[in-house]
Length: 389
Ligand SMILES: Cc1cc2nc3c(=O)[nH]c(=O)nc-3n(C[C@H](O)[C@H](O)[C@H](O)COP(=O)(O)OP(=O)(O)OC[C@H]3O[C@@H](n4cnc5c(N)ncnc54)[C@H](O)[C@@H]3O)c2cc1C
Image (cartoon, rainbow, N blue to C red; front, side, top):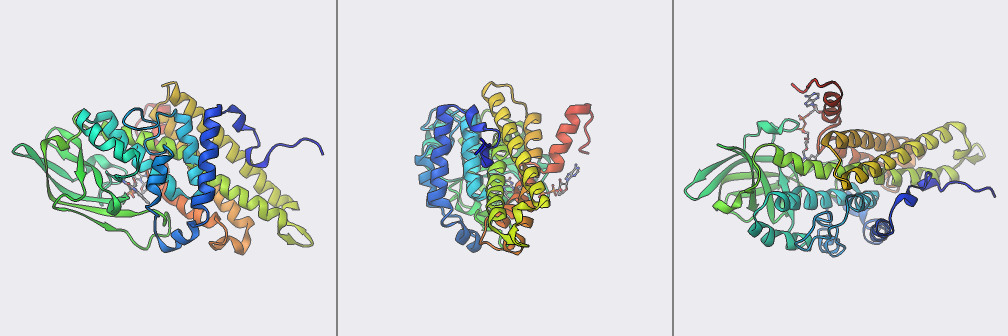
């Protein structure tokens, strides 16, 4: 038979990876096959995240993977991206867990923390022994977090924090919350141990998306913190935005993992499901769907790799990430929906992973900057005109 491209890696993107990057891919792929795929339907249905995997993720070096020192793996950006892709091919909840821990919680400590804060928190977080959450969004401040109401007031030597944070991943299971609050000097980041008096977390229930992930409301009722609870090296929105920059990079890759899982399922189904006496993959309309999906999957993966190489070269700008997140999450959702249609009625149950990924991707489209916000960031970069407000 004539040589033909590999359906799941049509453009041979694998060839562009280093041996080390390929090793990360194989390790995480294998772990997802062993530890995520057998249990994910049950966790999704029950609305649970299996927290016991945190230490396994830590042992694989995936927590704070792209940071150096303090027991972090010090991997390059592309390796981190590949890990996100493979994790999200299992479920977006697992990639979310790793993103929140590494990019949203460990990164600000690593980048803006004091030496004492780094020594105290980063090693146990890298091992998965201390779980973090990132509190930026509030009930009345989502896309426009600068208008947050949570405040931190100086009280003698220390601080008193008051306010409510909403939609916080890992909120009720976290040991440490990174809370962004308004102070007299502007927005600052605080390290809040979740056993502090006045801190409480309540889970959001009845979610139909990202069910294998904990989402909570945080209440800070006059939480007293010592002077050294504040991240000393940053003031203003630059703090939380630089964390989001890191996490959005992981999403650019992760979305392609969810898309690949959907495409793979649809392709297998299309070649085995028979109607009108032949596999439905033999009909032109199905082939058009599959070909479009393959184009989107391959271009999205190449885009992720391109942004990863730019990040490793220190050339990546926030606007580049916005273009990546905008394209890859949007295309992943299109792939998920097209895959769902190829599966017909079978596509609506948890028997196949497609509708689970599709529902998860609705959250991914919204968090870390909605698609509209990333459109406006790209629009501003193109025109020099700001259209947010
Ligand atoms: C599962 C999940 C987990 C999350 N985890 C975290 C977390 O760990 N930590 C955290 O801090 N937050 C978290 N979030 C919150 C998330 O970041 C916010 O939901 C997101 O920023 C959007 O805010 P919002 O939901 O309040 O929507 P809104 O800001 O109210 O937006 C509603 C709609 O209006 C549109 N819109 C807003 N402004 C404009 C504009 N200027 N022009 C055009 N359209 C506009 C939006 O794009 C959107 O379509 C999570 C959310 C989800 C769903």
